[in-house]
Image (cartoon, rainbow, N blue to C red; front, side):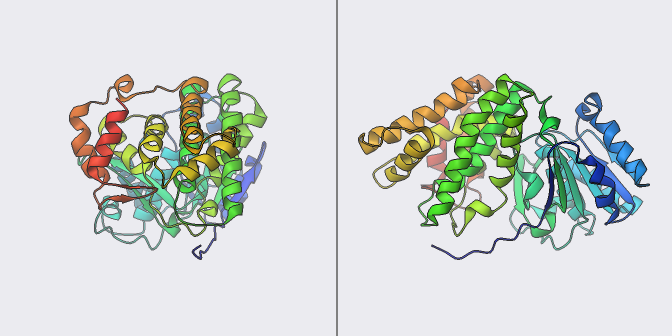
Amino acid sequence: MNGFVYDIPTKVYFGENQLGNLGSELHRFGKRVLLTYGGGSIKRSGLYDRVMEELHKADMEVFELSGIEPNPRIESVREGVAICKEQAIDVLLAVGGGSTIDATKFMAAGACVEHDAWEFFGAGAKPIERALPIVTILTLAATGSEMDTAGVVSNFATGDKLGRLARPLLPQVSFLDPTLTYTVSRFQTAAGAADIMSHIMETYFSTDPDLYMLDCFMEGLLKTVVKYAPIAVREPENYEARANLMWTSSWAINGFIIGGKRRAWSCHPMEHELSAVYDITHGLGLAILTPRWMEYCLDDSTVDKYVQYGVNVFGIDASLDKMAIARESIRCTEEFLFEQLGLQRTFTDVGIKREDFALMAQKACRYGAIKGFKTLTPKDVEAIFEMCL
């Protein structure tokens, strides 16, 4: 196995009634705060009023940026950067899911440079050496952005959806109250669970040798999603289900499970092209892609990982033929995503058309072939897209 460094110092307040600590945490970074959020659900749920009460008690000077979109746009990032610079913001408070948090991360970084925030992305990307402090209040278990160094932003003018990792983007403090996810819709709960599952599987399905304990940890995370996501879909106010999904979301992508693995992710770069063109929900795109990617990558050289996954996550009979176990593991994954969670199965269901496959496949491989569980060229990506129709 390869050596690695693990250092994720985000301070997490997990559980109910933790917002009383919000003011004191923000005060550590200054008095001028930019509050960012999405389309208004935090006002309908009453969370906005609770947050504002804590900010006023702490004598914070509050500026706001609302309307941050799913698949957040670079335009929102630019607007936030302008506010940070004009108002000498000390700290940013993102209240929402991954889209709000991702956009806020690049506002925080953009506030510290003179160039446009889009120059942080793509070939020749400029370094992210500093960012204003970021605090988050999570309202959707999915992306894990509350406890990682990553973010993804869309630029519809160029037809791109691009991600970036940088240490300064790591939130300083995150508030994770499972009750704040009670109002999340059935669809968004299911899509979020698919996103969590994909984060784990992108790392788990690897040919790099690694620690046995990390595989066991990932299998535990996957079993948690399989157990609790259907419960959360059926019973939106089930605290145990919501809490398990929320904490799994954070640990799926905070760097711990990567260990020494150095393989690229596969489904995420493919899905980013789907939502860049069609603006679909990220987790839904991943759900449609994942079983087909698994099927495409299955052969004699990869079958053992499918066996491990099928036996340890879904409890498939280990005495069966290897290929039989592998195929059953794919079937179980499909059954979980499409039957238990109720997500749409195909590109046809969501309006994705064959005519865009070639361009999307080329852009998914913009930095060369995807060197993941199996190396994928643009032709391979197109073949996987075809399987999703």
